Image 1 (tube, rainbow, N blue to C red):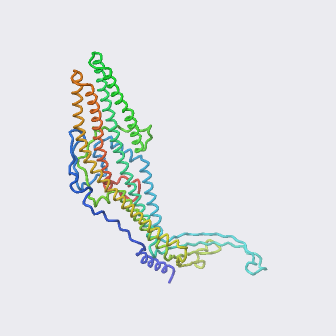
Image 2: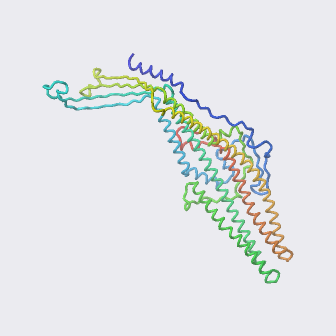
Image 3: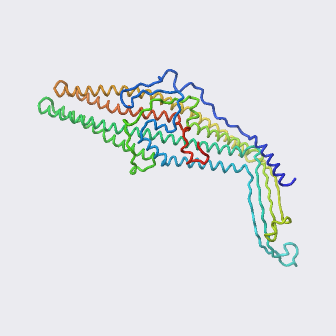
Length: 498
């Protein structure tokens, strides 16, 4: 049998042997068998409503798909622009994209182990030797040139699937990096929506506080005139002044929080605080999505990128058990070389100058101080750790959805209550101020009404903002619709859409 036939036979044998790889074959864990995210009948299908922008009733729709750009449902060009800037400039996404490219290239490099390794070698040698080296002391010296050119082939037969398991492990690592990128994308977009809503809420709180302070100044003027007319005391003036100063003292805190929120948005869009010039978001210009998706529980593990990431990390750890097992078994290698040796370069390729070799080898570990046994046990423990981490991630995912559903229902109820509170407090304040001006109400009643309205006005703003923020949280908890978009694929991999 010639060398070519031997190589073909060896390759065929290797292919047959490699069809069965040692170690466990990975199967993704089954989705939890649960009927829903909350106990039956606990939450209604539709939330409460309130008669103001952002107070619309929201309906929970089972199985409703999530658009890839879910934030556009808020119908805010300013918000859309912020997210577009972030997707283009965020260093967090750049890092995740580079990590995915690295993982893909590492996997492709390891796939090269499936094929023989081929290298070429050429060597030219000029040498002078003494005849004494050859037992001919009287022969003098010899001066000669030697040219050699060879092609060397080395091939490891993946008899027990160790190479294949290693490739499988690296591919799982690459898939985990892909879902890590999706998780970063989802976290970034959801954080921007939340920060933008918080910014809008702070601006509205500042405006409400300034309006309250303006009203309190007017009341202070009235009180001072009544003191002059003998209808009020100096104590009434001091109390009103203290109330005004207390209201004004809230403004520096709110303005500081607003500045910090702007800096946070600058971080998200990849800008320095001094260079950030994002558009201001107004609560009145946001549209509250009224049809909210509620994914089937069996689908959540497929939709959440963090769950998919931990599933691939479990896959990677499972494949490493096969790698560790294969390292304990015989390693089969074939090496061969073909070339020529001659005094002149032109003669290297003559048939008479041909040299070749073919070597087959088997290496079986016999004693390594228990190293291989403990490495396999470590791989098993790593897979068990990955399985526990996966389970914890799934539980957290279901808890996120459940918490958000409860929050959305509570937000709607709270906004309805805050709306009634604010309107009642405003009417009460207007009436008491008019009565006080005519002398029909005490100043204590005015102070009480002012404090009640101030609390109601700020509380209403916060309640409106909370509905938008928790709506964004639901889209995030359900996975954000990454399966309906492919805009990151071109920047992270050369394998097409995700």
